[in-house]
Length: 216
Ligand SMILES: [Zn+2]
Image (tube, rainbow, N blue to C red; front, side, top):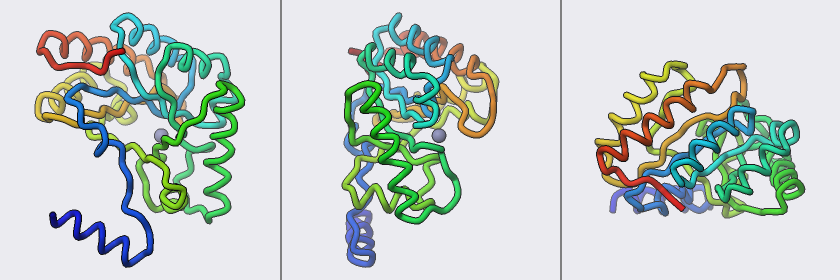
């Protein structure tokens, strides 16, 4: 109730709609795996694991990486996963509304030109709401998907750490289990092998513990 009043107050104050976050729409008890900052060559290994276990995921892709890896972007769609727009260049600095619109529209066009699919699903780089992308997207009535469980795979390139961190969160949360992983690197050049390894271990642990996964 308090949250609703607060959101209405913010709406009144700034003349904007409250943030429409998909994690509020995703009420399922099933775990939803999401992958940011790709596509990259590692995406193919992640796709193979998802296929092996019949799991459906969401990939938030970066426009400039889509141009480099068009075939891999195709593979994501061909495997019936969901694509989301994660901006063109993954900016962390402040953008004006014209720059913000270019980041979003350019990536929408790239995704559409390569895959012939459109979406209205977005994730903010770093989840940051102060870069100008957030204010642009809410004006477009876009769906912005956050996460509820951060694997921290961008900080720890350590398979066991990622597994333990995600499993500890998954066993605590009852619903809205949206897990953030990375299949690419926006600003550094890390391997994502640990994410891939951790993913398969996490899937098997979930199966043993009867934690339902988002399947096809
Ligand atoms: Zn990102």
